[in-house]
Amino acid sequence: MSGVRPRNVGLLVLLVLCSIFLFFGPTDNWSWDPSFYYAQLRSPIIDGDLDLSQEVIPAEQLTPHPVTGLVGSVWPMGVSISWSPFFLAAHIVTLATSGRQAADGLTPMYIAAVGAGSALYGLMGVLITYRICRMFARRDLAALSACLVLLATPLFFYVYRQPLMGHTIGMLVVALLLYSVIQIQQDRIPFRYSGLLLGTLVGLSTATRWIGATTGVFPALLFLMYLIPALRQRDWPQVRAVIRQMLIAGLAASMMLLPQLALWHRLYDQWLRVPVPGQLFTTRTTWLPPYIPHLFVHTNRGLLYWAPLLVVGMIGLFRVQPIKLRVILLSYLAAYCYVLGSFVTWHGGGGYGARYFIESLPVLAVGFVVLLRDVWSMRWGRLVIIGLGGVLIMHQLVLVTIVEQGWLPLQAYYTGEPLGLRYQWDGLSRLVEHPGDLLLPRPKIAAPHQTAITNLVTGPHPWTVYQIPLVACVVIGCGLIAYHYLARLRFLPLLTGLIIAYMLSWFWFLLIAI
Image (cartoon, rainbow, N blue to C red; front, side, top):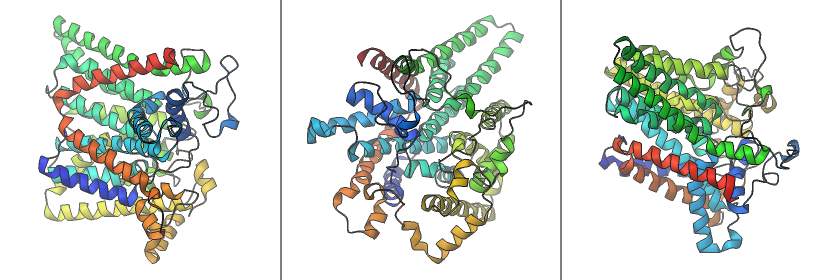
């Protein structure tokens, strides 16, 4: 499953470490989503409670619940739990080296470990995406597709600049889910494991990003494709086997959501809550969500202007074989776009780029390689595709710089108003004239959270400003090596069992231990 030859592991790790030196700088601007995700992790472990009021930003806009007296949260708990192994590792190191007083969960060691862990999830998602693409195309085209997924889409920003979000985890889970569905269809994963595996991943996807519930399309259609022929042939043993796996999938998904139920119970004294505030969904009189066209053609983060690679992938999905897999992928994408098209904040609010599509990247990467593999087989085609890929990477880097430096009307950007295209041309022209601006410090970001190369250029600085990228090198380097040796198909059922056990331990911790 790792898809990387042993002799290439060292080169891969070296390239990733170089990318950390060039690009990695987790922001310290913890407003909204990152502050809630992190508080839901830090508060129960360090403070032994769920009082988030002193940690989340903006706390002044939140009203304590009248029954519990605690500040509520609409952010899913799955992100915090996914970060927890890295947080706990940083906590142990801090206790051992600096003592209990320093182990407050807020020092650079914690931020570096959690940010690097979240980035590692995104990089593992890219590696699995590469392995998926290898099932449909040559090794070199699959490698190019994986590189473009990382460098020519908003995933770049959420791996290197703002990993303290849930997108990298959501993308990894969808990659695992798609990989598992294909392997089940090809009988490389025994059907008897399908319910446990798919249910666990769908539950984790939902617990990580609420829109992740749309991944339920994967097992639902897969099981129907087994069930309907069995019913027609009156193969009752097979019918019972499919129904059994459907029940197991439902049970596994439910178990993955138990920590979220415990969080709601502690914060609201209610086991179930509407996870997404109603005001985030637009009211409409027709069945068609009004913002679907905006997702593609709007100048404020529409895909055609902010991530055209994804549009290519969408077109390619219509050529995927076998047809059963094509139906599953297109149905998932349709459900995903339908939900996004209903969001008032379809543009992503204060986040970077068309970030809501990050979770769909493994699916769209398949469409990309399927659409272009015939052209890739010709020498001139390879040169054209590589050239266009380089343009897309540079385009994404220009967009990141424009947003980070504020070279566009930020208020209009945040509220989803049209931006035109002039700002992209002006930003590109400025960088062509002054390429050193790519290394400008990001405004309002402290030196320890700038990239290592920026600090070297703007230095001298004390060595402590390099603590975050150094810790990230250790965490991500070791993580990629471990991934190479452990990411094997035979380990997937065991992995799902461990994930369920870990989620159950968090359920007990949130409900009883604190």
